[in-house]
Amino acid sequence: MTPSHGGPDALGVPRWDFSTNANAVGPCPMALAAVQRADPQHYPDPGYTALRGALAAFHGVAVERIVVAGSASEFIARVTAAVARSGGRRVWLPALSYGDYAQASKAWGLQRVNEPAQADLLWLCEPSSPLGTAEPMANAVAEQGGVVVVDRAYEPLRLSGHCSLSAEALDRVWQLWSPNKAMGLTGVRGAYAIAPLHGLALARSLEQLAPSWPLGAHAVAMLAAWVQADAQRWLAQSREQLTTWKAAQIALLSELGWVCLPSEANYFCARSPCALDMPALRAQGIKLRDTTSLGLPGHWRLGVLPPAAQSALAVALCDQARRPAPVHPGAKGNHVQGTHGTGLAGPPGASPHRGEDAQRRRGAFES
Image (cartoon, rainbow, N blue to C red; front, side, top):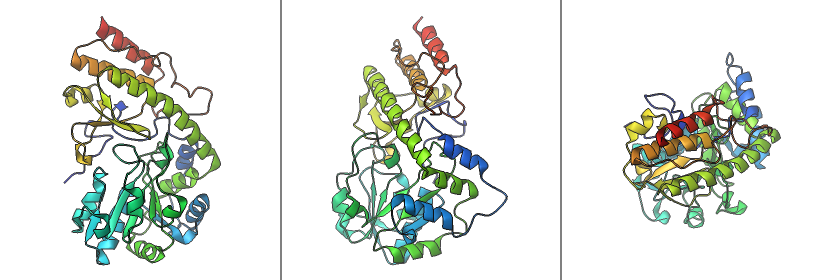
């Protein structure tokens, strides 16, 4: 079975890709430069000594608690295998969650249960996917005796609210970090987990289950850059820009009759007032994420994108509904709103005329 994901497909990279949750202000210039400088001619240190030390210092934990992984999905598969190999038989998942949790559990024969107390492996994600909200059962799940993993892929892209778990509670669970989304570099696969204080035995087992060199040179460079102060400053600035874009995107869709669900992250779910012709949208360079595989049928998850992308979406949606497109106040101009003079980079490959192109398409449609 081929997993359902957002992002590029058989038609290539969508011009206006709302289907992923990557940081649309990116890529982070510092992380991108580090990746471009990476040495692909040589193997990385197989123990990732310097990288693990930097990650441990960034999070203020002992280096023995850091477990590197080829990606978040690779860690999901590996920790599921470790629990199953040690005799685990049951898994608890949130009602709405990333499909790889269930896929890995099914591959290893774990039975899904409704009660956290019955599970040997338990998954949390905050901000959650696909909703981008807090997990209402987070504290109850974190207190269970099984292996609890909190997927924190979207924590760096949190635009409001805060994690449900206290620092003390986080020390009792596994934390899975995959900063490539926050850095706007989803094509670079690399992640790491922080073991709980009592989890060092499982951490050693996970190291033994890992392939040689799970991280290549480019992933090492991205992860090393992610913990640097200048990259974190850029990330903080990008969240301010994303907050502005998010408000405009929600207002635009609401004006078109969509029902947008609450979210604390750089993405949100929404229900269209009518059926969508997805092949037609894709032909116009627009891709949305159907949330059926994430447990939420009848909705779409939309990553927050710049005004030019929002205008293109409005034109395409109004074209399907045969109604005039609303004028987007941020579409005018030839640079990504809010990034000029701030050191923030616009989306990779961004054309300086995309906002003007969107206006011309809108004007042609309205005429």
